[in-house]
Image 1 (cartoon, one colour):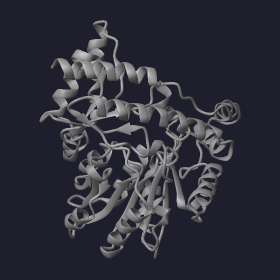
Image 2 (cartoon, helix red, strand yellow; image 1 turned 45 degrees about the horizontal axis):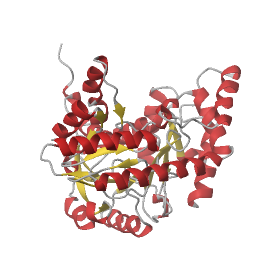
Image 3 (spheres, rainbow, N blue to C red; image 1 turned 90 degrees about the vertical axis):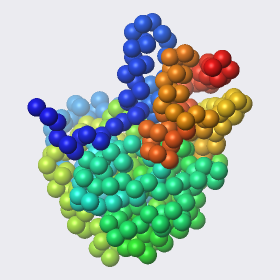
Amino acid sequence: MKSAKRTARLAYAIGDVVLPARELQKKGAEITWLNLGDPDKFDFDPPPHMKKAVIKAMKEYNGYTDSEGLLELRDAVAKREKEKNHISLTATDIIVTNGTSESIQMVYGALLNPGDEILIPGPVYPPYAGLAHFFDAKPVFYKTVEEENWAPDMADIRQKITEKTKAIVIINPNNPTGALYSRKVLEMIGDITAEHNLILIADEIYDTMVYEEPHYSLSCVKDIPVIIVNGISKAYLSTGWRVGWTIFRDYNDGLSEIKEACLKQARLRISANTIMQKAAAAGLNGPQAHVKDMVHRLKERRDYIHERLNEIEGISAQKPAGAFYIFPKIEENDDKKFVLDVLQKAHVLFVHGSGFGSHGDGHFRSIFLPSVAVIEHAMNALETFMKER
């Protein structure tokens, strides 16, 4: 039996590089894993009050909840958006999903017909390209400028818009580059979106993981329909709990059909995880002290890895302003071969930049979630590799 053609172009570079690393591990090698953006694999943990909420919820109710999501959680998301981003929402503007991955899939499924085009940043988190292919649409990469801290190239965005374009995606802070977009940049993208009567989609999952400058939500862009994807995985250090949400900030009734199409998909899969939704609501409504501690530790690690990478001959990197990724440039034509060579000889696992689309060629992505001691070990091994090759 042959698989469906829609799966042929699905790829996830972040996971694909794990396979050769596991083979090395079976042979006794100790691998330093810098490929996966999962805080819980390191010295981070969900806030205690959220763990207590899981136990309490499990004792109270273990059945389905509303397909659109637990009302308590949707109210908490609306409250968070009001306090952080100064926008007024109601629970009806929000759909709870099994992580942001399901949010992306639902939005794409509701929005894209075969042959449609969607503009995504280059480089990009792989599902934004892969799921477009899955729905027989075309992902079109717009350029981000490395020398300008990976800011979007507005001229390139304009040039890439056609009559088939349905939406523009931004990821802010960005995965894989760690870029953080200014309010001015967001407003410029908003102007282009309004000019061409498009929808703006924002992934804001890393919105609390910023260092020197504040995070501006796409909600600051007025008079256009905006869809925002977010969740608890990163900010609340609970990647395995799989709770996300989609926000529909409508304008002139431009999103009513898209939202209803997402709701149909939500009903089809019945509901997101009930117990973890209760915990997510507790997280949003409870103490936020963990955020300051998390950012403090990440900033120290970011500063260290950025300095070390730029000291290694043949490697250079912009300083990420948000998230927990850095995207160094290398003097290599084949970045995947480079990453696999580093794995084989230095036993450090990165992700090849070309796995994030063509604009990632000649780069690799590293996380800076581990302790400084672990990062130091990895950078020492990488430096030795670069000197001996």
